[in-house]
Image (tube, rainbow, N blue to C red):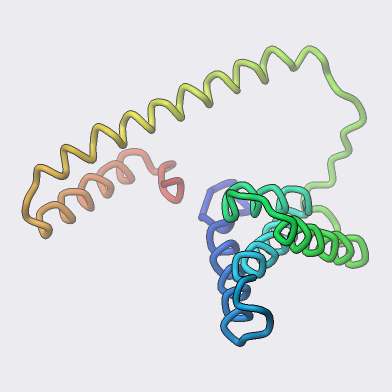
Length: 168
């Protein structure tokens, strides 16, 4: 992670924190109807601490985990984000890269727009690639062949494009 590669650390954080929320629910710590609130609160706190942004944790839990808002969900996620903010505020760690950004370069806007466009095109490309590959692999009736052909294909791609390792 420190060298720029994606290892899925955010996924393991979400899974581990959601498991904590679920374990709390299973111990009958709260009413049975608040399972989603406990899981979302745990995910909010986990993502907030991981990325040092309580707002990012709150938005992630509400958008990805909950998908629908209600008062108790907003309250539980907000309390979890506030506790995370307090933790981050009182237990400050030095930043890994101590660069100070002092001003915004307005000339960078066209580059951000270009980067956004390229990112969108890449997303569309990956979506098309996945939707085209699924039917192709679905035609293979033998599960052993299907799994091994996929494994060999991914192995060859990583062999020839090592930068793909950890990003898919």
